[in-house]
Structures are given as C-alpha cells and as structure tokens.
Image (cartoon, rainbow, N blue to C red; front, top):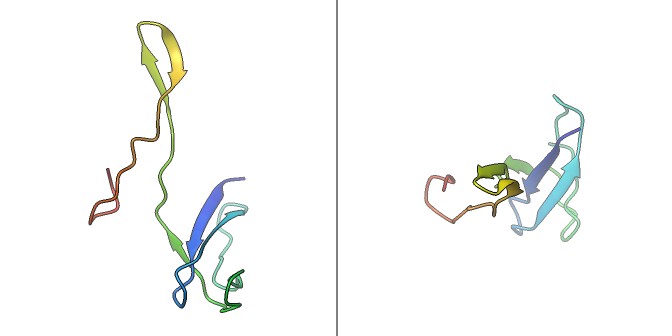
Length: 70
C-alpha cells in the first residue's frame, strides 16, 4: 500500500496516510483543526541510485519550486 501526503486547506497542516490504491482521502479529518476535506499533494520520494560503488540510496533531491517538481 502506498503512502499519500495530504494537506489541510484551512490550517496547512500535513499528514501522511497509508492507503490502498484508488482510495479517496477527501473525508480525512485534519489532526490540527479537525477540518474535513484534506487534499492530496505531490510529495517527494527517494529512489535507488546506481553508481560505481553499486546500489545505494540517494537523497530525495527534492527542492521547493513553483511547479512542485525538483
């Protein structure tokens, strides 16, 4: 099951949720302000990087930008 990241439209709090594929998180309550209707956001992820020393985990390399992509 993948982990999805949600953000509260009222207070901006973020929350990670383990969900089945295709499940909707629109009914999730915010843990800070109890607002219902959190929205799914694009989150950064880490991926294995192959190098001369073999496989190793690199940093996420995620940086804040206007498009949400690094």
